[in-house]
Image 1 (spheres, helix red, strand yellow):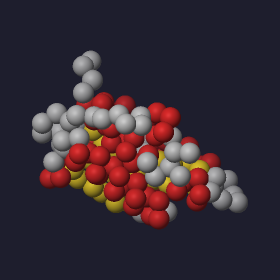
Image 2 (cartoon, rainbow, N blue to C red):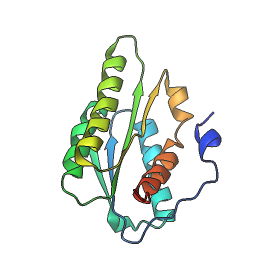
Image 3 (cartoon, helix red, strand yellow):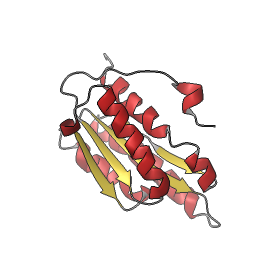
Image 4 (cartoon, one colour):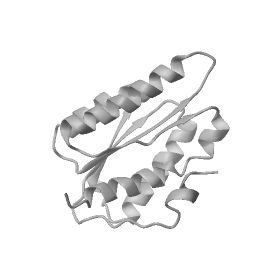
Length: 152
């Protein structure tokens, strides 16, 4: 079951006027990554973010997401950045190294730049689990908007 059913089903976000969102998407496992991206993009637009205020970068894999996010964040052109990727466990420990490095790198980039970077990287055991979580694209779009609406 998709996590959206348990977490934010039916939740709507309203973007502030002029909100600029960056998306960094991994090309790897695009069979799931592209529908996730489409759901994310659609949710942002439906929430009030104009298409011209959404910039997308495509990187080869999840390992490359943190650096691209950090480079995007230091330009101070985006209110939030969304990461999208899919890491599926294989027969070697490669999954563990990539998933760990990706998550830590994204968190480090967010803390270093003080720009909210939303973690939209699926880490699943198989393709069926990944396909069941395509709605993660909706979740991260809403989370990014909510992070920009914080009054801290």
